[in-house]
Image (cartoon, rainbow, N blue to C red):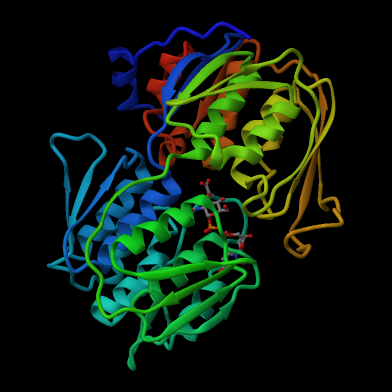
Length: 458
Ligand code: EPU
């Protein structure tokens, strides 16, 4: 058993760097060592904030991460007349009062939506509250087409009318919303949330088949149950929702961000560091931890978090991304950085998004040996049917990484570039790091806490 690492606090210098900075000069070759805390999950907090719209009394959400996606949802709620207040005595706690909720115009929604896809999840709650929802053109990470057909089909099944206008999509419910029988073509996270947020107040029973069952969705179900919703989870991805006439506000603490925890674990592996991720929990990370161990990682589960480091050389692995309980698509990018240092050939098969291996080009520029094949690998017992969009990255290691000038393409790809630069020889320039703030709270502060050697240069 290895000795426990020392625990460092966050430095004021790191706090200062956080406020600014879109371009980093990063000097690599130093292991990341120390302790970071993860707060509530981006992929729950933002949806929980939307759920506040369903409550007739105020709601309180705890452990909300300070990330730009949360800011986007906050301003979208405010544009719709919701009062959002920070708790002066408890950092990361937000209070919502929906008593003044009103419709907003396309331009105002568009102006506040930023690059986020969250506006689409406002549909159900706004239809119940105001009878109308407007959706401007949606953004999100550049990781594929990211269509919204499952969402629109589900809303139509509830009786909503979807009109495309030159400004975006206008959705109305002239005859109210009625429970429906819906089978998703794919267990989409967003479409499952859409159905949950709409069905809880629709008339009658909704049966959702082929639902996503990610831990963040289970946490959303728990939150909705606190509000008075009646939701049961059946075997084989079936969720039953009995609509109710009204819901009250909630008081809820967000589930931890397992994507951020996995990212720091991969950073420890890639830089040969030793990172204690406070707030990380084993149960929601079982699949990740199996792969981490097979790749030569070492972890130790504590009451208050998980410690991650290497256990000798990094080993090659074959991984297929999948919906929960499979290996998450959001985990593959930081893992691939570590796999460039594995002794042998690894394969990462991306089955969720069609363009989520493009980020590997910059790693090749840094010296990695990665070939992306336009087709994935077949596995006999897939949870979901094969889709045309699959790709596989074949990574031959170990290859020393050297410094490069790279531009962040998306949230997880961007995090990976920073980790690659920290693992590389020499000084890299990483541009557009602002995107990383969409999903990683106090990112620069945490890097500084872990001993990363970098300057903000732009
Ligand atoms: N899809 C459709 N039609 C739809 C909706 C989805 O074809 O109407 C397809 C997508 O194009 C994709 C697949 O279904 O190929 C899965 O998409 P899903 O709806 O599950 O993803 P999402 O809800 O848009 C969330 C997370 C993503 C995470 C995925 C998968 C949020 C805000 N985003 O996206 O997180 O990768 O689930 O777990 O919750 C990230 O955190 O970096 C991120 C991208």
